[in-house]
Length: 544
Image 1 (tube, rainbow, N blue to C red):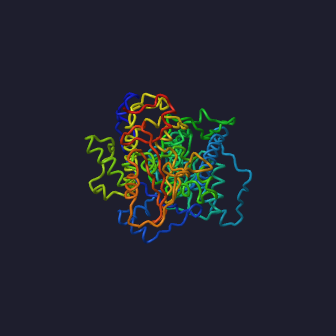
Image 2: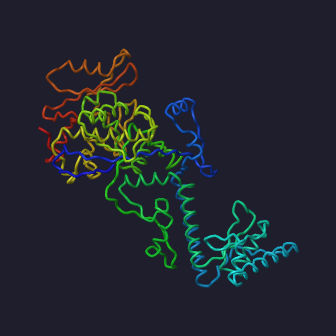
Image 3: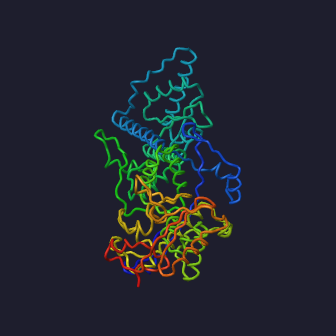
């Protein structure tokens, strides 16, 4: 999301507009035996996905592969080692005109008469093809027409043979004709060697192609979606990874860094390093605990840490700026939001659609308009891209409602800023942002607690409750709702402003906490009752 206009830091009512791009990613485990994992599906899950138009054909046939961090790092390490070996061979060939043989590898010796004869005939035919380059141009053109010419020079396909004889041919040709390029015959000729005769320009063009294909195979077919996970984590941590194999835009990342990152022997080094980004980009979820744990088990490690504290630290390390719209609605918003249903689709209807209709303005605009066959909003619910859009829209709208109770941004947020996301410019340890918007707090269903990723050892009671004023009530008729309870308790005292927080344990048992609201706290429709905020920054003012 990107603001399209600027405004004054003293004007909370100014609102930016945001451009929205939605993405659906279909992920499917790679088929490699080294990194694959089982796919288990419950019949009810299949029915749910079918109901919401899941494209199983695209998922299984075109799904993007993914790996865990340690596998991705190992794949990149192998790729880098191969790249450096190729650079060493090219440098050696440029200095001596010959590639240096591997001293650890024993040279093949042919003893059988038929093997020796085959080797001699093949080398003779290769010499004839090489000599053809010296014949008059007209004759050469006629002869090379049948030699599978390409834009990368002419090629000659040696006769098929077993792997032992192919190795013997490799060694002989590399020793006698180091300027020739040898490669496998390809799918149509798996038991043959293809010999390429290239000019310097053709050789450079081929090296570029091979490097690009190898890099694309690594990032598309092997690492896959892990690179997106890595990019999201880096953005959330406020860093940019330079000289990264996985995050590069193209295969030329190593070539571009040759002049600045070289070892003492002149070999290019592409060790990645990080630099600070302009800003950290938060990750916004809705009731996202299970989503975050799912992400950890698919992109970090197949198993979660053994302790709860370690699991919290792991999530916080990858994503140090998280916002949960479930927390934003149930703990940080006004009573009209907090005491109503906080299901994502209901929140979207209440705080986005209705606000747009009442204010006659649209804050979020699609860069890519939904296709005609996308259906209505109701048809798109539970589609990943549309749920992500609803979560972002709810986040912006709830932040706007919360700030409506105040007339001025705190100085810790910097300036000038505009709109309901100005708090994202605040320092990571800003107390006002944390209290107002629930930064790094994750909703924990069916419990009295809220997960606090910034507190490694303990979690607070949810919704601002404290042990001293929280009570357990049992034996309630299951038909009684939260609204019924709040309405009943609110009638006990009409003179004092009190918020009642209700957390259900089961259908017949709930926990209730009373929270006194001072008269001097702003009453905006989204205002949060947090008196401590007024002392955190003397410039943090309420709206009259």
